Image (cartoon, rainbow, N blue to C red):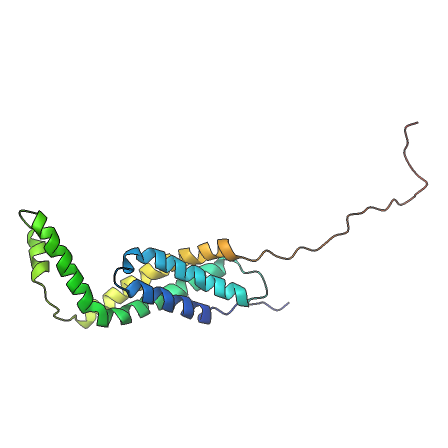
Length: 175
């Protein structure tokens, strides 16, 4: 009997690109874990729709984790041009918080004085690795959510349950 394997890459690519793009968007990224889980569940939905046979929970885990890794790459790539927007938003938030605090902690003062100096390659790679692990973990959870929502039930064989008496003249009557 030939083993059947679903196509993982295309659904993971679509769901990962979607989750990465929405997670990188300012103000929508506040719900980042929601977008990761939703993108991975969408990946499972796409994979399940194109597959003729029932999928297993491991398929949901795999497509979700793969979508998470792809989503973290898209998020990192979109985060490069949006970094100046993020810095302005952080500056506005810290400035407004500083108005309500009589004395700022020293670390916050350094954050207020921080300018866009660029990042070194080591910190970018470490950040990408950690976000890939984070996205893959929540993507795997999203794949399980997608599995529980969109799984196909195996087709059950229809059995004829009408019983035919072996000997029609043989009846048990209690008279």
